[in-house]
Each structure stands twice: as C-alpha cells, then as structure tokens.
Image (cartoon, rainbow, N blue to C red; front, side, top):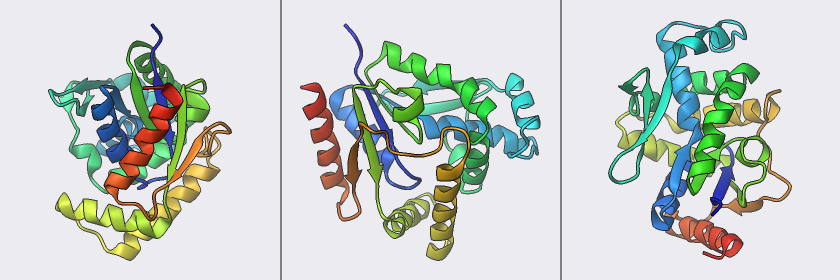
Length: 225
C-alpha cells in the first residue's frame, strides 16, 4: 500500500509547524518539520563561526554534519546534530538567520533532499517547509499553501517567543519576517512559491482550532480519510 504524503508550504511564522504537528497526531501520520533540519545545519554553522552565506565553506562543512530525526512517545520530532539533541538550541531567535541563509545554498538543499524524500516513502507524512510541494514532494497526494498576513504572523511569533522566555519587540519581529519573506521568495534555489495544484489556506482571521479544522478538512477531502 502506498503512503499518503501531505506537503505544506508557506512563509515564516504562518503556523505551519504547529498546525502540521497537531494534524499529524490526529491522523496518525509522521510529522516532518523540514525547517528544523535546516535550522540544525544553521546551528552547526553558527557554532563553528562559518559565514552562512559562504557557498564554499558551508558545503564543505556538510561532510562533518550528521543530522538525524527521532520521535518521542508523543510523536514529537527531535533533532540530533552529530548525536546530540539540539531540539531546543535550534529554536533560538539568532538561528533563524543562519537557517534562512544556509537553506538558500543549492548544495545544502541537494544534500538534504533524499533524507526528506525517504521519510515520505516509508511513512504517511505531513511535511512542511518552503518547497515541499514544488521540489521535495512534487507528486504529493495533498498540497497546501498555508499563509497569513505579515502582521498576524508577527503577533503569533511574538507570543511564541514570550512563551519560550526570549521575547522580542513586535516591530523587530515584523521586520525579520518581512526580510525572510523576501529572501525566501527571491532565492535562486527552490524559492518559496505556491504549487499550481496546491490549496490556499489563509489563516489570518482564524484561531488555532479553526485553522486546524480547515487543514484537516482539506486533507480528508483530498484523501478520503
């Protein structure tokens, strides 16, 4: 029996990870946060004082980086960097810039492509990122483009940072989101865009429960679950 692959793309702070993780739990699917994979690469680059935009130094460092995923008893994805659990470290605000920069390098994306595709061959997955429906899983059974207005995304990110004990001013968060949107859309390697056969889900005016219901409705309608 073939697997079911749900590809969720969208800009930073749209709630992809939170919604995808919750929906995967309800459906009994494996959740794959591809952004966390790039953050793990970014963390290594940061810790080793490598310029994240260096198209030669970063690819050269990949030989020293072993990234692995594991799941706890509740199905939460944990990231391992060279055998060490870095699930919390990769969420530090400063790692966002490193993750965005390394993810724009073609060599990094090519290096991680097979890891991501392999997960979709052996599990029913909900995978989120920037290029899942367009590059990683172009033949996914369900493709969704999840987005929200920049200010709404900034407000959500501020609340998330406060919960983690790393608050940032709203205007600073908004500027970071808008800057990352520009980089993700204009990068040469796998730019952020909506796949032609994706369903648009804009959660600007929706709370979490409403957003999750809309997401699950799309998945169930497209798969017959």
